[in-house]
Amino acid sequence: MDCMSCSSSASESAVWVQHIEDLPSQPSSSQRTTGSELHGTEAAMYEQQCESHFCYTYLSSTQASTGITAGQRASVVDNMVAAAASLGLDNDSLFLAVALLDRYLAARPAPLHLLQPTGIACLWAAAKYEQSRVPASRFFSQLVLGRNGVPLGAVPASKQLLVVLEQAVLAAVDFRLAAILTPKAFKHCIMQRLCGSPAAAQLSCKQLDQLYCMVSYLSEVALLEYQLLPVQPSLLAAAAYGYAHVLLGIPLSVDELQQLTQHSAEEVARPMEYMCALHATLSTALKLGRPYAVTVKYCGPQVCSVAAIQPVVSTGDARVERSW
Image (cartoon, rainbow, N blue to C red; front, side, top):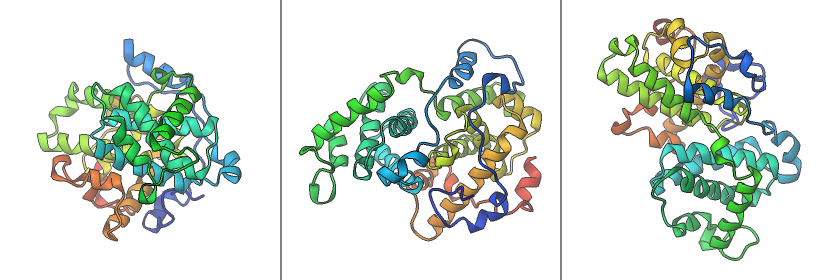
């Protein structure tokens, strides 16, 4: 199985992924292992994610008619990362936009030439929902333009195309944006629990900053991978938290993982293997001078340069032994 839909060059991480089987469909709430009692909003979030219904394998039935592949989806998602950064959008908007894109493509298969404009329309809709201040529509319209300023698709004006696609995206999710939960929300919960736990006292301020940035980076990297769509948002956030410890060489006990993420080591193992392969591929692209937008975003000193940290290429890596 090729789990690297964003790249075909995953040889560096082959030792991790060569025996990975297909990920299971979204588990029910009764299958989720909890290490501590959840209350209020958090409990509702974990229950709500189990009620999210859309076809996670939509490309298997639409690829023949649309021409859209997992790799092309990954390319558009990475372009959305770059667009969100250029527009000054926060990560809540980015994660919601990618979730909208997948739900729209699952409900209403779009032709390949509309894939990029649809991604921008999803960003526009998500920004208006998540942000108190939204860039003017003309900035989004400019991103819909093709080469030489020619609008993509059949609509003559990019602004018209943007409006039409936004309406179609919102209709596809029945205008229920509040019902969509993303890994970003669960990452926030995990980091809040960490700050209030004894584990935080064992880390320096630098380690806490690195950990936060690395979890954020891995969570965004996971957006590129089509085959991670069946994984619950809380489990993706938990896997990002676990693998961040591996990359940074920070010890993490099984009990601490369970308590802070509400998921067991067994549950996060397979998503972590996907993240290992993804991280290795993006690191290779960076070395070759063809970095992904998400890598560029996390290369600067303001985010602890976490995207420049070397990947784990074998189970013999000393960081693996220190972390678990």
